[in-house]
Length: 172
Length: 172
Picture 1 (tube, rainbow over the protein chains, first blue to last red):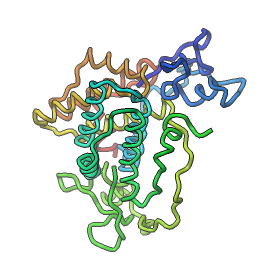
Picture 2: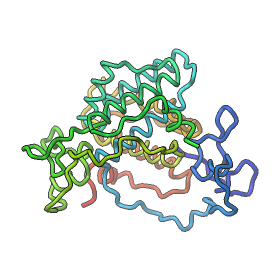
Picture 3: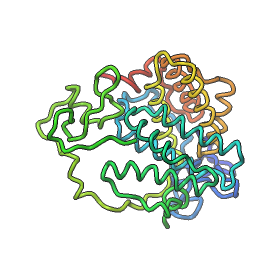
Picture 4: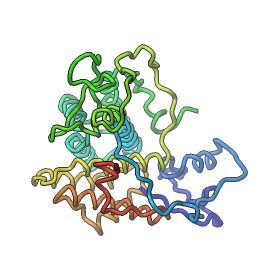
């Protein structure tokens, strides 16, 4: 959960001065770089000057006293992680990867901090075992799990055929 | 990852109209209720009128076209989840709970969407096996893992003796 900052003066560095992180396909990795770096590297935005991150002297040296997350922040954070995990899951996972992903989702339903929500997720998993045979299968399974919650909360239902736009490719 | 909304006219309902969710100690559960409901229920704020959630007619029926998260949003989301998981981990976990938590952290380091960050977390886990014998042990272990990343990014180091303020109790 880190990315290596650098001094911005060497090749292989993004406009912010951080090291550029690539995916296995040789393209800049969206979930490994900052949004601005990713956009600049992929030509989605152009700007002549970007603030470097190397200068940390102006950063505070202590943390702000932030309170623990409520159910909504926790929910948003967790869906962001789960969908993103699906987005990077192999297209052709091996047996170990399939087994680990099934385990991960099951344990997730045991340890999720909102116990009430965790029970719901556990029930969903019992009725709909995690689909782990491919990235697309997993991405749609997480999308359906999220829609199951959306339905209960009266929130809009997401079209799971578009899950790659939301969680891998973007919309433009 | 849900909470049951209700019509706000019955006992057991929070000011927003959602059902109040309690912890096993009988107090309102912070990670199961919205921040405002939690604050109102625990007397931390008082306000005579709160908008009910039951009326969903004004909500959009489609999702906004949001792009996938970058490394920073993904990092914030993931730390929010991991610290919160530690905050709800049992004070005296049984053997199954210990084993599942160790597995969860290990698999997390395999499936985390930023592969570069995942490798770092995997190395951290190899050098510092997850400490799962109690809530306090796990909470401090996650805090140290987070500080390991903070150090690399030149961010402030959090005092892990205060982890319960940040992730369980709040500061006031």
